[in-house]
Length: 416
Image (cartoon, rainbow, N blue to C red; front, side, top):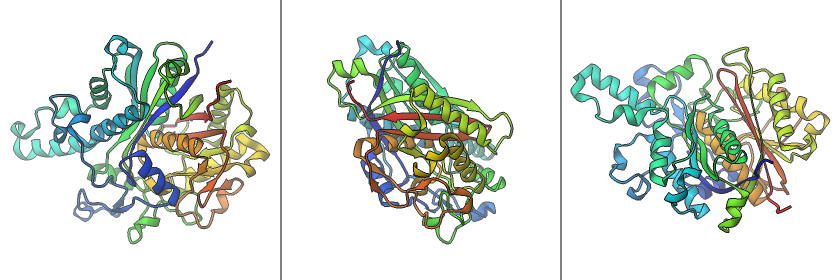
């Protein structure tokens, strides 16, 4: 019999806040984290995109990193994830237990790793040779490095690995962590997504495939999922981390349970590197419903992938209507990317955090900047301002480049 899995801790570093509470309130208000890029001069590189959703005013305290490591020596992605993981552990009131640490693990979703460190050290090598490359550049920049740092900091000696499936990475990490607990291999798992790749090369790469918004003169309204006049996503960054436990473990230590994680599915489009297939996305949602042992009409809210690109938003709404049938017109749908921008592999982790907060607080956040729904996105109940709602079951979707798809389902916790 599968073990029940519950969420007892949440952590977030986002373009609209440096913790869960601040970020959540900003998302409810429909605030945007978009502004002109500050990390580099876009015009220097001939870019036609000047805006992004950067994390702002972020510093990392010594207590949050493993002993002996200078926080300032770490790349941004590791800083964000360490901060979010620490917040999740603190919220869960989980203490280190070296005797049982092999029953605790970590799965993180990320992309290339410390993208900015690769660029900086490559440039240093070209300009100054071997002597100018940072000594710990490589071990700190690998995609797996951040999970390793978290495991060291929190004494996690159980299952640990990295997931890299583009923008579905964070959701895949959460789903895989859930399955590990369900199967009895671990009692506690930290999981989610992290990304920091607002760099000249990465931004240029996204601009080359025409996925980024060029609303440079009005950044705060540039990310506008499902809108009639959407013109691309705004590149974001951050980290979203969940602390999962088996229900038995959480009850034994008297943990405060935020919600329950009940369903997960994954699939591949196997067709196109950037364009999704609504039939496959539909099937992925149906498989998550099947894994949760519920019918479509049970879902109260969908936190959509909703990137603010013409093709993605149209495809996802079509898939939702296929998966939910006539019930779709009553289904509450929003994309929190209107506030955070598209945080890439971190998106699934952040959106899972927000979905858990929806269930906990009985409030549904809006798709920021959605004033007029596009004709190709009609047929569901779009949330345009935050509203109170009794949410029993909620779904979170993630669809990534390469055709990687992941869906998770959460529910309000009850002892029965």
